[in-house]
Amino acid sequence: MARQSRVHTVHRIQPGARADRAPGARLTCAVLSTGPEEWVGVDLASGAFLRARPGAVGAPALPGEWSPFDVVVLEIGEDTEPPDPSRPEVVAVTGTPERTGRLRRRVARRLLRQLCAPEQQGRTVLGTRGPSIAYVDLEVSTPSLVVVETSPRLFGCYLRDDGNVACSFSWAGTTQSLPLLDGRLRAAVLERSPRPPDSASIGTAIGGKPGFLLVGLTAVRAGHAPKAVLSVLPR
Image (cartoon, rainbow, N blue to C red; front, side, top):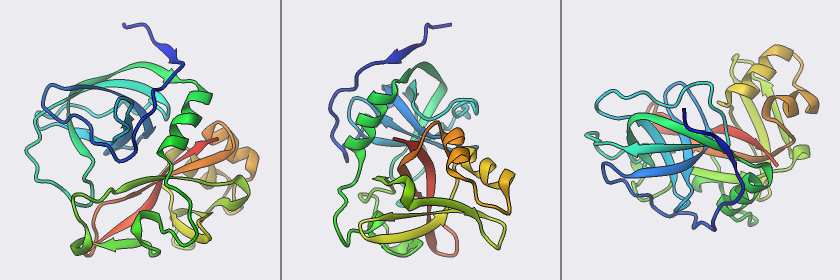
């Protein structure tokens, strides 16, 4: 097994860049969110977001025990699927990604701040104030992921009346309430239901006070791609 280590430095990256997607390319990425069907990372060489899915050969995705800020090396495989405007960052991964280390907290914070969208009054999350974007309005050149910085006092999570978990946050002068897909926080909300989790429970779940949110579009339903908070990351 390869020796794993803490990653002490991250070179300055360029948000909005595009990663090398040529089959056989090997990318070193920091994990930002994990899930049963896909995971999201950032290529540490370019700053490009990646939504990784198993390649056409049926290779596995990231193991479920991996977590945000883990550093992995993956190999790009052949992707026979057509471009998806609701997930333009998707890449096919061949083989099993190798975990090689983990970002130190200070390095992770610096990386996230480089990735953050500028918070300007009136700016919208992923280009809309609403909870979703019509599929016909999506373009392959438009990102489906964004990192926004938030404050613990402007963030909360709760169980909705329909039984789904959601979180609210304020950014650029607007408060939004979106579905929460972060498995760690979802478990904390369900465990304390019907009371919302307190700051201590949230801190225990994510490893610190909430400071950054990874917001992304999810699977298209009824002609719309809903927005969701994919991961809550500590400051």
